Image (cartoon, helix red, strand yellow):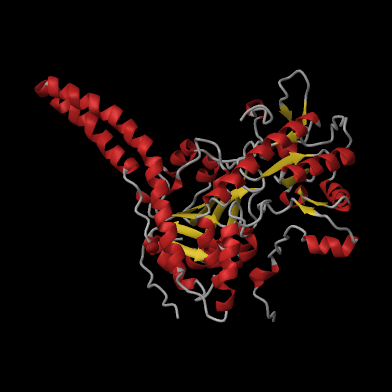
Length: 476
């Protein structure tokens, strides 16, 4: 008789990016840059650092198990963000509704019925879109990074034998936690390196309980836009919990990125995950948060450990939230770094995916594990793509200008400046054919089923009712 639960036997341990200290020990080299784990190259917010210094003499005390101050600040910030994104919709709704009202006044009786049928639906739509979301502390749960929140969601809602749907490749923690709870994971292959929402919707069955959508997706950096998401949510069974994992939200530039907060007003079974690990530069403190309906959040608090987020992380996150200048600089460095890397990857004739995150997924046309070792000897840590099922790809974090220049120089030396097309590579460019990406390996068609529709990336842009209330856990 085995002492270990059978679910654990199938688990694959998460392999993190190689730490700088480990490389120093193994290779005896210094001046190492880590571009493997999508951390903020500027480091933490100066305000967060000061907050940590000020709080050090109080670490003998247990943390606030409810994260009251941080929740209060987050709720205020989210309401403010909702209002700023609502004003354009308000203006748009007025331009649609007012002409119809004016028209009905001039021809009152004949058009009264017409105005009601045209105006009232618009008014109803404008109210649901325009009214700011009233986020309160009860709509928030704080966790030790998004990883813990994903674990809590699966722990609270997934019964043995129920299904979880997500895209592939994506964040491996979805699979780990599903298997841990004895669930069944359906991994839907990406379409053009992007979550295939129509296929994911078709995969829904009566046993489907949770759907994870990483937006932007890791490792591809691609997004699903608001039109795709709204179509996906339309008609989806209410018993299914949809989780939007928005760890890289602060780096997104695409104007069609979905405003997921607005979906909470009409869909009670949506949970949004965000983190302080990326743009806010607090990855080492492990802190993130989830937003959702109060009943769902209450359930998550029932399975949450009493003191899951330490005091230092809470204080630093609270300070980082108000450091607008650090966030602005972080975004600017990322935008400038993207442009620099795009230009140089084009010069090397390498396929890459335009990103909405702080990393780039690219095809080096050589074994990524070999490239990883060679780059390591040059003091540069990257992420090999074999763990994502792309053995010739690497994922590289966008660093500072100095770090990006060093990466490109090392990459050029390693793969060669004049990189000839390798017909054995999964993706390569065909000259004089608008650089259409070709898939010589038919097995890869599950990822890109129709090559003709692939744009040039270098030139274009459970039957348990989750509504049932759970008694909130008391923190001591």
